[in-house]
Length: 507
Image (cartoon, rainbow, N blue to C red; front, side, top):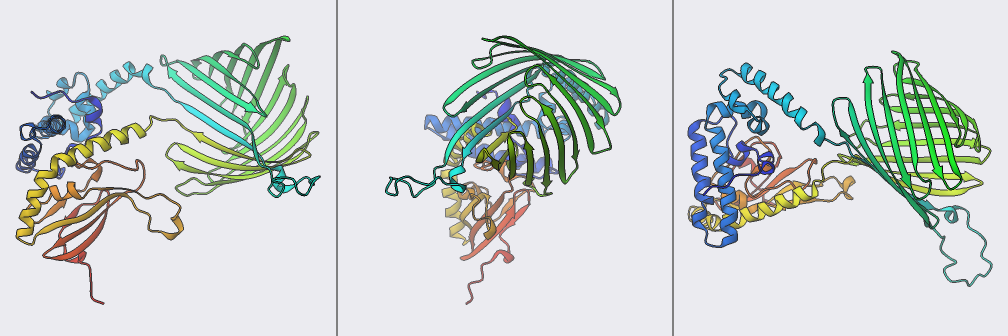
């Protein structure tokens, strides 16, 4: 009996890629591809319980894909909106519509209703990890009192502080948002943490207000109120009132910031802080597509200082940035320089060297994560599914190879799919490929292999080993006793064999 497919399985499959047909495929092409895959994955062909279970899952997935694409109406919905359109509650109403315009109109109404129901489930997690490394001894070593002291030949570099923070936002209504955040810190052997909860309400198009409640083992309970208001189209003000409860009693605080857009890319700030670390601060920040510049002056207790900083943004895929700053005040002078680079779709790695007089030299390493749903679990699950599919293909592949060998036809010697690193300048990058020899051989028919113009990750026996990165398919194959080789882009259509793929062995 066919079992229902989970929403996650449907979301992660491309029906056209699964059946290995063109998006313009005729009903006859769809039927031929469906029959072939049904014969391959039919549960009755497998006696092993585990293989039978995997075969049933793949059989049902193929059946679901054919069921959608073989019906002109559901296929039209799928082509416009994908699987989300088919999963929409009330889509049977859309089914009665006959034109693409009517389908689109009805779907958009259902989409708005569904988004309102799912509003409370959406979050916006953010996190920061920073590590402080004391490298003073690397630049300014102390004279050793005894020359034969053990380890005196090596500078002492140590981690002296670490900070981790995380926050999650959850929209409650169209105007209300709940924010939960927490942090852990340690410095020179002493550590602590805090947790905060805030409720934010958008009061109008010009402003919002926020109530904050917090607690920690270092500072004690906190109650705060924050207000934001646009005074004019180019000017806004924020006010933050706070009551900090500690062993010394209640410590009130008030911070007010007045800001004005000086031009399209420049903002000027005036800040007044009373209570905890009272100070007055003025700054100008200019942020463009290629640079970020800040100049600031602060007069306050306990610190007064002047600051100038500059950051250059390279227009590359890795969003590389280099930065430097100079800060001088009653505490001394600090010079910082560093760089940061995007290491994944949602993570940035940065390093900063800080040289201070008289405070010494330190190295700070920071990793900023724009948290999203982790792909590690998804990759593992897809890997397991692909391995199960490969096991189901073994017997069919054996028969295909025997038939191809008898006619000196197409034999897949080796095939790899994923991220290849050929550039010598990128030797440090990790190669991420998977072996897809068996899945490709299983797709060979009459000494031909035809792959459509779509991501290969959706093919049976494949999975994406490096989500978000550029991938290729590399195939070494034998045809008429001669070796051939080809490398194709992930979404590139591929037809083999071809004379141009032939490996020239002359010389």
